[in-house]
Each structure stands twice: as C-alpha cells, then as structure tokens.
Image (cartoon, rainbow, N blue to C red; front, side, top):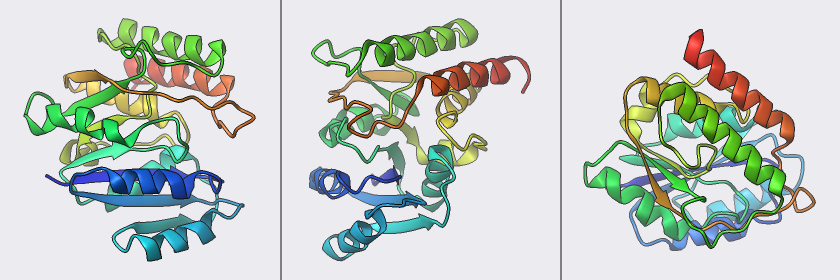
Length: 228
C-alpha cells in the first residue's frame, strides 16, 4: 500500500520545511506532493531545497493563487498511491495520525476516513469561533445528508485514491471540502471517523480560514443537497 500525501501551500515559508520533515518521518510507503498555490513569500525557494533533501518529493506550482481547492485538485491528479490524504502545510495536524486514518481503508472497512479533532477530547482550539463554526458546518452536513459526522471540516480527509479521482471537484477555495463531503455522502459511501491530535494556530500565526469561509461552506452544502 502506498500513501499519497497532498500538501497545498500558500505563503507557508515559516512551517513548510518542518511539516515535510514530519511527513517524511512517518514509517510507511508514501509519496509527498507539494503544490505551491502562487505563494509570494519564500515558499518556492524552500520547496526547491526540500526537493534536494527529499529526492522523491514531487513539486508542483501554480503561477497565480487559485485557492486551496484548486491546489488539492492538482495534487490529486498527480497522485499515484493507493490511498490519498490531504495535509495542510502548517503544524496543526500530526502526520503520525496517518496510520489511524489509513488503516480502515487498507482493511477494507470503508473507502473514506476523516480524522476527527472532536473525538479527541484532549484537543484545544485557538478561538471559540473556529470551534463553533466547525460544529455548525458539521451539524448542517448531518441534517442535510443524514450522516453522523463529528468533524466535517477537518483537514485530514483520507480517500481510496480511485474514489477521489473519480469525483469532479469544482470548488477552488475552502468550499472544496463541503463539496467533496456532500458528493461522497450522496454516493452512499460511509465516512468513518477516527480521533486525531490537533495543535491550533491563530490568525496572527497565519491561519487562513475566515468566517466567510463558513458561510460559503453552508451555501455549498445546500447547493449540492438540492440543486446539483
């Protein structure tokens, strides 16, 4: 089994080298795909250094910033592994949790696994607005699609690669996440959740998501439930 790790990056020069080091240290067969989404800081230069340090890393670039969803889509198209996981370039998530996220798919219990921050009661949140925003998006997902998720907006979305490649993802920004969740649930796929660790960063530390992204997520869920 080979894992494809897709890392979308936008102005993540401060943490990129460390997260790649942590990903590379995880003991499983994997490929690392870094997609630079038009960064304006030192990210491209750091990526080139990482390519020399880790020869197997695939480096992809968008000339202009197109959004996280567009970067993830580029990474998915290049993936050759059996299972695929999305890894943010910050240090909020622990790559050692890949084992828990991948295992149910390898064992044939499901084709989609979400790493739930909520299921790990030891986790903290940088601000209550992020916590309640995520819970609201999760509640609406469950009400609209009859699911029982605890953490729909989690970064650690893990897929059978053939399944995620079969989906046409249209969202270019953070809306790709509710879109893919909606499409997977509409297909009748079971999304299994496993507890993961979470080390939140604040907006001051570079967190990109904003309140308007939550509204966009809710609108995306409604669209894919009733009109698409």
